Image 1 (cartoon, rainbow, N blue to C red):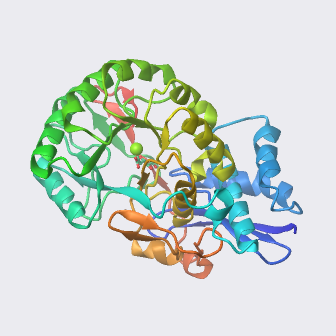
Image 2 (image 1 turned 120 degrees about the vertical axis):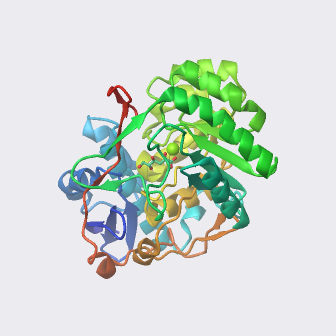
Amino acid sequence: MKIESVKIFVSCPDRNFVTIKITSDEGVYGLGDATLNGRELAVATYIEEYCIPSLIGRDPFDTEDIWQYFYKGVYWRRGAVNMAAIGAIDIALWDLKAKALKVPLYQLLGGKSRQQVLTYCHAQGKTLPETMDAIRQKAELGYQAIRVQSGVPGMKSIYGIAKSSKGYEPAIKGNVPAEECWDTNKYLNFAPKLFAAVRKDFGEDLHFLHDSHHRLSPNEAARLAKELEPFHLFWMEDAVRGELQEAYRHIRKNSTTPLAIGEVFNTIYDCQTFITEQLVDYLRMSVPHTGGFTHMKKIAALAETYLVNMAPHGPSDISPIGIAANLHFSISINNFGIMEYMGHSDLTNEVFPHGYVLKEGSLYLDETPGLGVEYNEKLAEKYAYEKAFLPVNRKEDGTMFDW
Ligand code: KDG
Ligand code: MG
C-alpha cells in the first residue's frame, strides 16, 4: 500500500480546527487532528509545505520510520508546531492502518486495559455561589470528577471562567490577543477558601481538581499545595510553569497534594525529570500535541516504570479526532489516571461525527475500525477559519506574566 494523497482542512464550526486526511492507493484513509489553539495556520502550513511531499508514495504502515523521518530528519527538533504536525500525521497513519486491518485502533496498542475511560469535566463560576451551583449541576449529571475554577474577589477576569453564558472557551476571536490582569496574592488567599467551601457542601466522595495555569513560583505553589491538603484534591495542575522541571522538587518536599503537569509539553524530554524523580503524579500530555501514538506510547512506558500515571489533556481545542486518539491511548495503557473532557458544541460534533459516548462521567468507545471519527468535509466548508487567540496576561502593574 502507498500514500496517494494528503489533504489539510482548516474550518471553524464554532471554533477553529485543523484536520489532516491521508489516503492510500487502495482507497483507505486516516484522519488526524492538527489543531494548535491560536496557531492553527502555522501547523497547517508546516504540514502542507514541509511534510506532504515526503509522505506521498510512502508505505502508510511504516509509522515508526515516518515518525523518525519527521523528528530526526528535521534537525530543528521539538517545538509545539513541529510536534503537532508530526502528531496529526502519526494519528492519521494509525487510523488508516486500523481501518485497513478492520480493527478499532486500541487493538493495535495492546487491546483494552479497562472498559471505559474516566473523565473529569469543568465547573466554573464568576462568584463562589455560582461556582457551587455549577458543581451541583455537574454532579447531578453523574460526573465523578470535577475541575473547579472560580472568579477571585478583586480580580476582573481569570483563566477558566466564562465571560458570557455560552460557556468557557479559551480562544477569543480577533486580530490580536485579549489581555487579562493577574494578582497572585488575591488568588492565593482565595483558593483554600474555595475548596474548604466545596468540601463542606459536597462531602468527601467526589473528586475535585484545580488548575493554577502556570502562575505560581515554587514557594507559592508549595504554600498552596500545603493549604489545600485537608481538602484532598485529585490534583493541583500546572502550579508552576514546567520549563524548569527541578522547580517541582520544592513543592514535592513540602506537600502531599497530588500534582499534574504537561498540557503544553510535546516530547519525552519535557518530562523525563518529572518522571524519573517522581516529581508529579500525573502527566497531562495529549496524543495530538505530543507526536501521536508513536511517541506517547514511549512516554507512557517510561512513566509506568516510575509509577506516574497518564492523564491526557482534553479541552475544546482538541477536535473529536484528537479526543478519540486520547481515548484509544487511555483505554489501552495500564498507567492511566483520568482524562479531561470538556466536550464540544453540537455543530462541532456534527462536523466530526463519532462513536464514543459519555455515560456517568466516563467515555466509552465503540467497535468501529480505526479511531471511530469521521470528518464531514461538505458541512465544514461552510465554516471558514476565523482568527482567534488565547489571551495574554499581565500583573496589575503591567508586567508581562504567564497566562
Ligand atoms: O488552548 C489552551 C487550553 O487548552 C488550556 O488553557 C486548557 O488549561 C487547560 C486545561 O487544563 O484544559
Ligand atoms: Mg490546564
